Length: 512
Image (cartoon, rainbow, N blue to C red; front, side, top):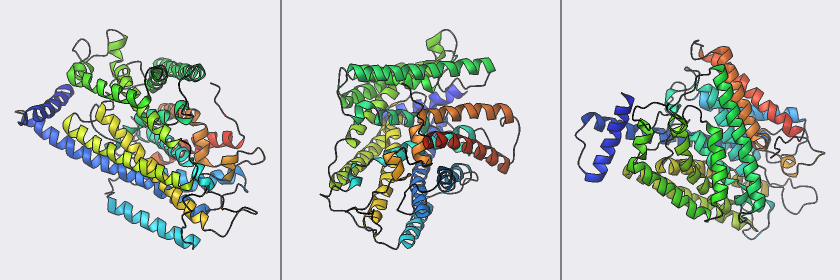
């Protein structure tokens, strides 16, 4: 049933693209039309969600003001960020979408305009762009990357539990079976892209060396150990896991470990941009010439996940190749972001370059979708890779735009730092203590706290998700909307509080 349906859709795509003649299978054509229409709708909705993240950051700026000095208790900061950042995120994923609210670009544009109006009324000061040749401190700031990483991680932590409550999380945002675009499909790809974006090779722009290789192998060993532990625990508890996502034994941690280790070794041979081209195009060639059928039917053609490790975990093993190409793209863009910048003009040039790259990737996504194949998270094909990069770059650009706006307000503010010639830069999502990390300053900013303990935060979310599912059994017990919302909110509060305490106490859980 499902396999025949998927193959009929793909046959319609291949037949139409290769011959220009419509497929004789009418059901396949109807399915293809519906898939393409739904894909466009879902992609636009995800873009609107990305814009809403920028509105949340503007709302935080309205609440705090441009002067962000950690003069209050870290617990007060945690409560403020909980109200200005965490609550809007939960409402975004668990309330605004629950009744299929028609969130068109008109709604988001109106909400953005309202937020900007409130912002300007709040400060009563016109934005002022610093001179392009000035060495204004913001020119060297990249806190928008920290905010981007935190929002991706927090959104993932919310969704992995909310998806289990049927009346809280809309079905359109669940993971697709094989092909398609949805909110949950962005998770694994975003984490891989993000890992490449902030990899040591991207931050320092260094050539591969033994020190970096040793560090990467150590991180890979940790991720592999976490993945093995997760698989063992799930088997022991007989926890239900879908085999059509990664396979029988594979999981996200194995994918990330394989990507980091293989990419670190491959960098000795070629530059990241060449590796990205070779891996993504080469892997898509294999998918288009028989590998897709193997992934759908299995090695023995019976669609089973038995008969050896490779057949049982074929989705996870082969998709790691496509994810490696995505990692190289992230690494290439990361080198652009982390290159040395000496003036405010350099910052604007970087922003315009990112905007151009994002536009080109969106064009590539449309062309790949129409000419090659529909995006598939399970296969990590070319369309999925291009779409993931486009989605993440859109989010980065939106966050960077808010940071540019906030610093323009700060630059024209009369409230200058005592004795300073220029205003203190606005730290998006944090405060001045987040940058200096002075031992005399203890702040509880949520966004930098999540960024500093990203992997522990994600692990805590996974553990609590399993505990909540075993305790409340949302798949079998029907909860009303407010009960479900209360459970997810309490879970999110615990996750956020855990990493905020670590951040306030300056405890870093990274030993590799």
